[in-house]
Length: 153
Image 1 (cartoon, rainbow, N blue to C red):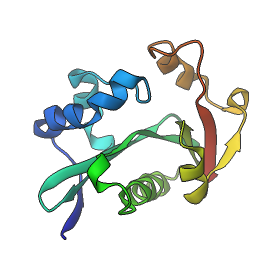
Image 2: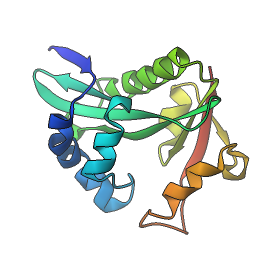
Image 3: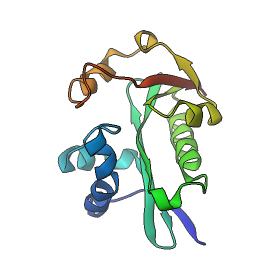
């Protein structure tokens, strides 16, 4: 089994959108338009297994202090290979490279992020207000059960 992590190009966007579509439809992941993805394409990391896109995530920088793990997805047939954890680790490493001090995740997968070294915080304690601008676009807003989790790096 060949596993490869790489930075995508805009050519990958349609495949990325197709992969994340079920999670977007369920409301677990926020819809990112093709244009949004194109303007932030450098923040994404893709994982491929035997030539097939297996998942991706994005490291979104909010401020000199805070980055966020966004749009984390692993195709169901590839779950259990620890690809999600490796994608989160890639986000953390990218945040470290840029000198960021803390990584945030707004998630429904508390146990997963605990295993990745994150701790739960109250949403009200999220230090950057810019994050909430995305919430307004969510189909589950204002009734949201996402958990705020952070990792100091």
